[in-house]
Length: 82
Image (cartoon, rainbow, N blue to C red; front, top):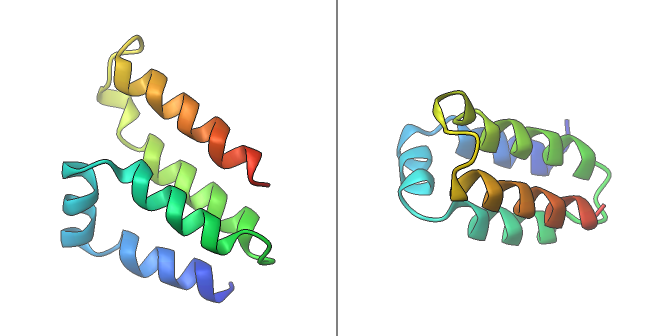
């Protein structure tokens, strides 16, 4: 595990941080974080953890909701950084 993974996991496991992210636009933070991690050997690991985090809310979501479409577009953007 690299330092970016440890940072992400620490933040992800913090209930207050999770609550804050889901009350705002989590993609804004993730875009910034992923742009900082770009080029690091742990990028792929962090990317997969971010995707898992973003999609953990999907089981209760409607499949055609605007937020799901937006989520797909954001994932595409994150993937383009690889």
